[in-house]
Amino acid sequence: MKLTVWTYEGPPHVGAMRVATGMRDLHYVLHAPQGDTYADLLFTMIERRDHRPPVTYTTFQARDLGADTANLFKTAAQDAYDRFKPQAIIVGASCTAELIQDDPGGMAETMGLPVPTIPLELPSYQRKENFGADETFFQIVKALAKPMERTKQITANLIGPTALGFRHRDDIQEVTALLSDMGISVNVVAPMTSSPADIARMGAAHFNVLMYPETAESAARWMERELDQPYTKTVPIGVGATRDFIAEVAAISGNEAYLDTSRLRLPWYSKSVDSTYLTGKRVFLFGDGTHVLAAARIAQDEMGFEVVGMGCYNREMARPVRAKAKEMGLTATITDDYLEVERVIEALQPEMILGTQMERHIGKRLGIPCAVISAPVHVQDFPARYSPQMGIEGANVIFDTWVHPLVMGLEEHLLHMFREDFEFHDAAGPSHHGGHARKPEDGGGPAPQPAASPRSLSGKMNEGSVIWLADAEKELKKIPFFVRGKARRNTELFATERGVAEISVDTLYEAKAHYAR
Ligand code: SF4
Image 1 (spheres, helix red, strand yellow):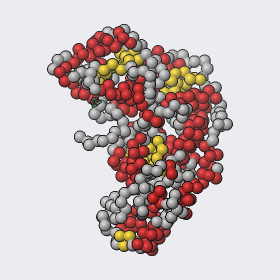
Image 2: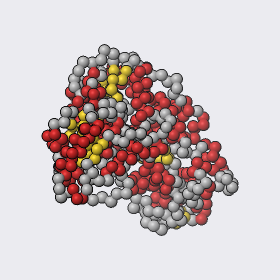
Image 3: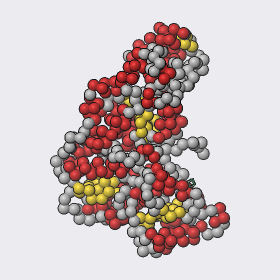
Image 4: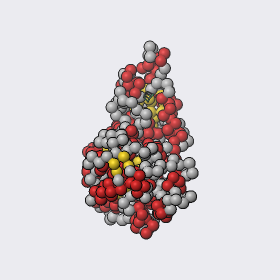
């Protein structure tokens, strides 16, 4: 058992639903207790789809458990077929149904429905949503895709986009444009937008573009093996990654590398003098592995930020995220426990967090600006406007999104210079936090907690073990509030490690010199 308040991912059958809902003419018969239909709301409310997901739930109740739940499943499957007449059906169990072991796959097979029925084995107690999506897509491709003659023109399949994917809708459009500029057209986009008949003709493409490893890597590998289709390894999020992606596509397809940069604004925007104050901003990155890896490269190479910490919640991506963190001199935080993420953020005191909806909450609590780079996300991150993350326009969108939550350069300057001013005094906080923002307390920097006594840090410091002398406290306040929390913690750590009980102005500067080294 594990005490959990927030989860980054849903159970694996939600991943299967994301695949089914993204597709057309496919139906999902899900053996599940009454109440599991809550998952419909993810699609109808958060993604604002105008149709119910193509899912039939058996919705068994307590009184059904004494009777024949297996028959309940068969009736539901037959009804679903009769009503929706899909081209194919996927069948599976939710967490509770997994416990009663009715074997939906086996039962569906004995029913002899006139369309392919694809059984799903999703271990709800070991794996999660992304695994569910990846496995479901893999099973669908394995059941339906066949080797076939290649298209005359060079074509690619775009694989990985699903329902409820962070910006998948617009990423498809952007990647399609990148390929089209190189003279490559798209054969099938799957699972999102495709039907089982489309899946059956995926083998006609010359190669696959793996847009999201989390949801399509198994299928990509299978198609490489069985259909002889290579797949791209670079995810085109960020300017550098988009260029690498184009080079990779050129190498695979034999077509000339071409990237239309006439609409690309990120490089000049981040080079322009107004962005100078962004240099060295300390950021913390968290989310799914793919988006975090992309963000790390953009943050460091394209925005000039300093990445002070990074991690992901999906252990399937732990290895590449660890490797990237190591390359950047960091230790990756691989966890699905948001309390652990919060502890790491609190200790690192970044000036900005790039994360998920959860990190927005953490950022709000700690008074640290945050931008969203990855699912899980809320309704505002399924925007009406065109907002890709990939390709040229994606880079423009990312620049705007990341800079928005930060204190603008001029305001940063005013907050520093006019600490006594009625508008720019410390307690007023930055303007983008609004009039009701929690006020950064006197000495604590971004973290709006009581700062009078030193806090415990990584267990190395005990409550009350060091005190700040009045002069030192005053000197500390001269440091701009958004970096003051970090200065306070570093100084306390420095003092504790040296057995210094009182922090004077000298200690403050010694610590500063020490950490500047
Ligand atoms: S079966 Fe799984 S998803 Fe459904 S209510 Fe139970 S725990 Fe939640």
